[in-house]
Structure formats: structure tokens, C-alpha cells
Length: 281
Ligand code: HH2
Image (cartoon, rainbow, N blue to C red; front, top):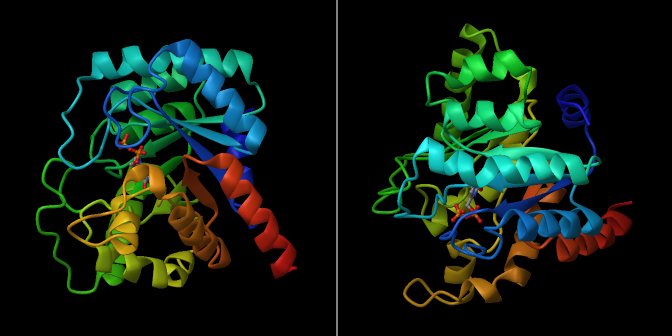
């Protein structure tokens, strides 16, 4: 599969594509430590592809609040063998690489990845050059602050308007570096420097994001705002009890035109979407 085909697919409106999460890390908030050997990682990718994921998002650095940062060599050591093995063994899936480091992005693209998922939306000054060299599409995600401190006290006037302004600035920056808008997917970054109320406002305001004309990615899978709503702010429901809440959010996002849903639970989300599609006609 080629990056150009992915770009063409993303730019055509249709039901959401499923992006299966594959964290090759010891410390991710839900699947950390489960797939940190290439063989288990590839088996997990194969299972998610069989369940309906057309994209596999390989990550080598956790971005959960307070996570320790990882250097580029260690991150590459985690993700590059997995990307190479998935390319070899699962030629029918697109591979996305969840990194904000241009060096890691370049190595992953050399190994056959198709899409860069950059939670810092091109903060690394070398990232635009990497995207240009490979003709790769990218996800630009909004985050207030950085993973170390982002949940301490996030403050917005109008969260949706500020996210839209952020994307317009990032798209203009990209364009100044020779990267046209049609290369990018936009992601409001649920849980990245946002309170529960901010996340809800974003989900209620998804139409405004869709009006940018760019495909929208929503990633709510098992995030803490779901645990806080279903439990309470002080005693959130644990991550392994957040499947139903995640499904509810992702169906809501599908109904508002989200183009990619980034999920841990591919089979369950695919089934829920099938019912939604039958109902929506
Ligand atoms: N969420 C996480 C990581 N990467 N990328 C995008 N584009 N959007 C998201 O919402 C997003 C993301 C956090 O989830 P997870 O990968 O499961 O955990 P961790 O960061 O702890 O590895």
C-alpha cells in the first residue's frame, strides 16, 4: 500500500476508518508492556487488521500525563523493527507512526510507514522536511502544553475556537514549508491539556472542525474523561472498564463525520459502527 493511496482515501468522504493502537512501550496508560516485543506486536497488528483496522498506529513513547520522555534512538529501537515486520507480514494495512520526533519519523518511513501521527503538530523543525522527502501525510494534533504538565490546569476561553485557530496557524506554517493542506488530518487531541468539560465541548463542536474541510481524527479510547464521567472526578472508572464509554464517544464522533477513529478495541468498535451504519442508512 502506498502513502499516495492513503492520502486519496482520506480525502474521500466515507464512514470512519479504524486506526488500531499498538503501543510498543513499557508504560502506555492502557496497553503498556503488552506488545513490547516485535513478535507480540506483529501478532497484535494482525489481529486488529483481521478485526477491521485499516491503519495501525505504532507508538514507541507514551504521551500519558506525566510520562517520561524517551530519546530518539530508544524510540526508534522500539518502533522500527515493528514497522518493518508489519510491512512484510501485513501488506494490506497502512502503518502510522505515533511520534513527534523527525528522526524517528524518517526512520519509520524508511522502514515502510505511510502516515506520521504527530501529537505536537510539527513542533520539531525538521518534521516538514521529512514529510516532504517522503510525500507522507500526517495527523496534526492539538495539545495545550506538553505531556509532563498538560493536565495540571488547562485553561481556555473558547476551547473549540482556540483549537480551530491553532490548526489554521499550523496549516499556514506547513504551507510555508511547501506542504499543502490536503496532506493533513486534524485531531483535537482529547485529553491533551483538557478537562472533562473541555473534552465534551470539543465533541459537541466536532461539526466546526469538520467545516475546515480536512478529515478529522478522534481518539477517545479508554481515556480518563470517560472514567471520570462514568465514575467521578476523584474516583474514575479504571481503564479496563471504559470500553462501553469509548464506544459511545466514537459513535457520536462517527455521526458527526469523523474520518478516523483511533481505538484499542477494534472488533467492538467495528461491530458498533456496523449497527450505526445500518441505522443511518
Ligand atoms: N492519544 C494518545 C496517543 N496518541 N494520537 C492522536 N493523534 N490522537 C490521540 O488522541 C492520541 C494519540 C494516548 O493514548 P495511548 O496511545 O493509548 O496511550 P499512551 O500515550 O500512554 O501510549
